[in-house]
Length: 320
Ligand code: NAD
Image (cartoon, rainbow, N blue to C red; front, side):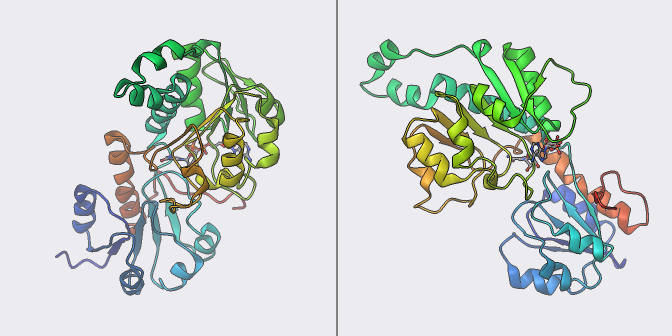
């Protein structure tokens, strides 16, 4: 064991190669994201805390970490870290903002094609006696006919826009709270309600904030055009599950594809488990080999902070 002072706590599972990089410069405690008692014990003298998605870094977690200097988030989205509490304690937060962009955009297009072509029903029909009936009855639209409405034109939103516009020839409209600036592909900014009323496919790419929590509620869903479809690969709590389930049951929304849910994994009575034409995936947007490897690189930034060097991807508070 390396006797240098740094104690790294990996609260969630990271790749062994990433853990080895920490071991080369210090001592390591590895946990699996569910061991609260083990976490509390380890944090008593931790210099660095590394998390993925499972471990919530609350004010209380920070309070029981007297020596903590850096929190490393392997992934995108900092909504499960109390950034305010970390900033007040002068704890640096580093993350991997662009790691999953292409991977999430790929999944989004996969979900879009699955919804538009009804691939799940086709697969079922091909294996049973609905084979001929499904084929005879299917009438679908081609992707180039569709208007795709992107909410949140950041890294992932742009990667989705590029695929939709350049790859499939869709019309792309978007809504964002900040000006998007120069865009690599033709996409038209619109008001949020206009997007709801115009888009055939609505795709969510916003962070989870006070403003986006519950953004897709019953009121928003009452605006969407008949036959519209919703894709959420951002954060589950952006969508009010009960309202979406109701809209699907009443066929006001033709289909939904969700990589993220407000409760993960969903309990057996989650309203979207029984909703019609709803595709669910278990939060796999970032699970490409390349994205995971980029997320492991957060260890290097954590080491940079501990060694007094400037990190590559620090979180910077908007009020700083
Ligand atoms: P980003 O910061 O580059 O883009 C987010 C965009 O949303 C920004 O342009 C921002 O201005 C905009 N926005 C913020 N609040 C808004 C609001 N109220 N209305 C409209 N627009 C708003 O982030 P990104 O890298 O594109 O990632 C987006 C989100 O995707 C992440 O925050 C994360 O929650 C989620 N994500 C999910 C997975 C997954 O596994 N499914 C993986 C990575 C990221």
